[in-house]
Image (cartoon, rainbow, N blue to C red; front, side, top):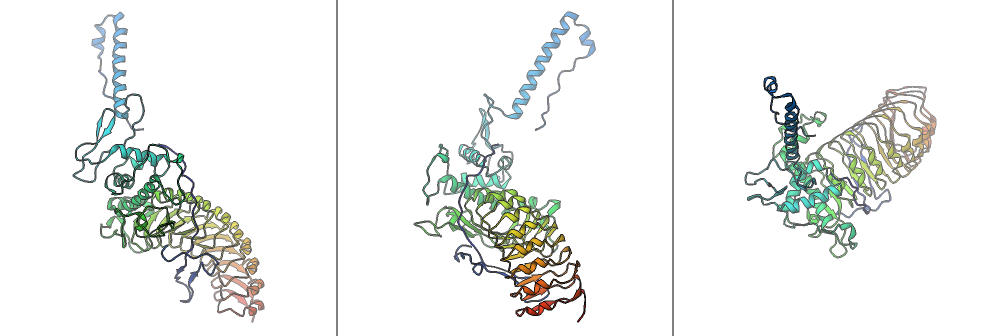
Length: 519
């Protein structure tokens, strides 16, 4: 297999308004994050080592050896050893399928087909060749496969398995896709591409990646296999059995033009970068800017090809579906991504550290999943972040103090997790913060007085952290824009600071289930 880096790309900016209803103490408590109010440009409404078996060698009995003169025994043994060695070399060479010259052929080893009318390619003269009824241009197939591997779009093992989504997607590109993209013999890196033109290779990669996503989530066998791992069985709260899913269960709600002859810019949920002559929506295969397939009844895992082939994508929204499994570190290849919405799925495992490579990210919404482990410390380097939502997961450990460096952050939702340790004093450096929610965790220590530096703060939820003790800092009286203060079900003591009386805009104040004293 070839291991190379994806060609670097430049992405443009986007933003999106997101409203997430919240089950809280009061029906009026909702998470509303408007990017327009945050001073960001809004998005147009249209953009949303194989084991070898050696044959048994002849067995020579002692009686046979004894009748041979001693001076001939050594010669016969040598002859038989040479014959056995030649046989062994022949068996190994046949098993490895090496042609003359020793070079591994550019092929796919096909053992299974998924249709009764399709025959297997034949192995002739050291290479696979098409057979009657196969209908697959193997030269083209191998040519595109090799380029996909060179560019690091897919792993070699997935393209050599005829039952994998990657193999099926490539077969569709080669045999069934009426647009019939192909590769030139000259490496495209030596070609000059106009700013508003896309070459066949990049168009092919994008159609291939979306086809992988299609087969990954619409092939029932693939969905069953991808959701049957022990770590993701019953990832949803309501008695969910992935092995009981049927074809009807996994059908997308909307799939207009997917896997058709139409340009991918017309596929449901796909928005391309605006073309100078053709605009935003046209029957073509220009660079994908946004993939928005939210609320579409999609089951399965999110394939890495979405990260490795859609290099100019600026917004990815797969929220409110049935995705499961881990988010792979290849997501860091989307270096110019600005909006990442994965909320309300069944994603599990750790949040990859490579997410810190998304240095242009504005919005990171991973709430309502099954993520676990610690928050990556790399989040503290993502200076453009405006909204971070991680609530309702199983994250634990200490919150990275580097988050305090995010001066542009206006919404941070870490509630309903298993975070421990003290609330970082560095949070006082998030001077742009408007909505801070740390409720329902296992924080300890005291309420940091540094939170009084958040002069733009309107909502502060620290409740349901019973290990937080001490007095309420008088500095909270300086939060002149505060409208909600939730400090209930903690272990606070002492007198209520009179400075809270200065909060003229305060609407909700909850202090119950503490050890407060005085008048």
